[in-house]
Length: 496
Image: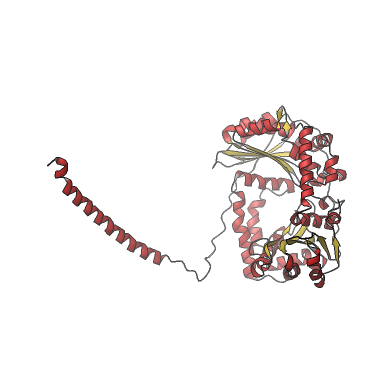
């Protein structure tokens, strides 16, 4: 008998003892688990208590200025080794000349299609090589170039960003490509009720000559008329140090960031920026009107209801935030609960105050079943009428909690925080605005909401656009007697 065989029985006994111990331990743990689970069984008889809103502890905005007068705002956040650099310029679609609607949007889109000595592909390759992203954008109120980059590659990426901002080439072939893409998108939009409805609604509210009556990208006619000279002149007039600000958020010290920016943007010289166009306040509607835009065979009816809303600087901003959360600004809002959950007319329904430098539209909207169009319209107006009545305290609390508990999540990333700083810039809000946001939402009362609703929600004066199959929906819509009804083709509703 070898040594190996002599010790085999002992080993086997040891294994059996260990296995028994493991089984005993498993039984004991199982018993403990049963006791623990029973003790921790949740109470589902009532909703859990809400905790306090997460604290919003924002770093200070450190304001510097480059040698050419270009302002720099720096917010240091050192949790993640990335940096967000945004060049914000105070020009947007609201500044488009009357015959060149879409010029601001197209100019911003063309900035990275060739700049300095790089082509569009070379710009993309240079940015990808350093692990960064670079984008250009424009809204009705402002334009921006946004760079997100690992902090160790910031010095390499900034020269590319500076070329895009200061030295765009506006190559003819890229302009022709982007122009055709946009014209094609506008043509395709005429086949899609969900695209027709917002365009027709804006045109109905503001008319064809007001800037807000046409989409930010312009029209087929204005796009066809644009030249590289138009883009160059627009860029030279508005993209100036006196009209811009650099916003920096991320893992970098303010002094170091300013020194790097000075090398790339400090030599940016220019004349005084052109005076911004003041978008006129549109005349408010005196009475209600319903327009059915005929789209034969449409599977759904797209509904838009509303009128001219308010500018971003309204004194009623916080009351309107709470009001709209109750009406249509959340999943549990009255409109969504009515049209989606209770009646099943729509996949979703909501409302919005689109606040800009000048009053943008207020609208309630949904895509609804074609055979339930009239019923859905009736429920829309039931909720629009009801919001003018006193809001119960529990519903008011729910709306305020929805806003304040979600507010800190809007500052989670460097991109989020830089976007909120852009908001301060464009709308000239105070530096402590976000610190005061939650207390001001908490202070909104039921009386405040009712007062705001009386002023801004007047259904009898609202415009209604319904894009759908006229033969199916017109009789029911007329039977509601909500106001005068007229029928329009897509071309009549959109004007081209």
